[in-house]
Image (cartoon, rainbow, N blue to C red; front, side, top):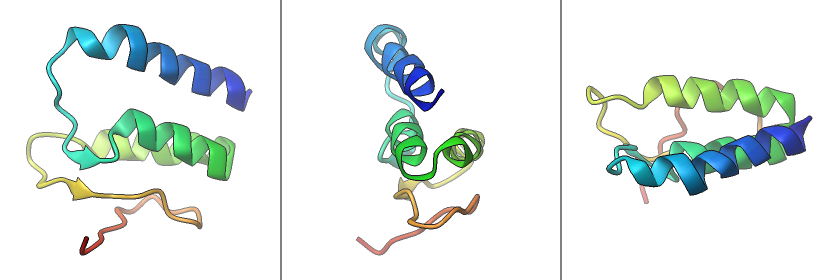
Length: 80
């Protein structure tokens, strides 16, 4: 199941994302975050990725937001 979800995200990254201007406010991008969250946390990573996508909008500052080592739906701010 996780491999299918990662495949869908990679499909999006390769074929759909290039059709639009860059708009993700976070580093790593939301799609990269989703893949890493799925790899680290399994199906809970899907929930983390969806929460991240919902946080990514024009009214937030953005910046560094790495995937945490433990399950969390909150932003992981870093000073880097």
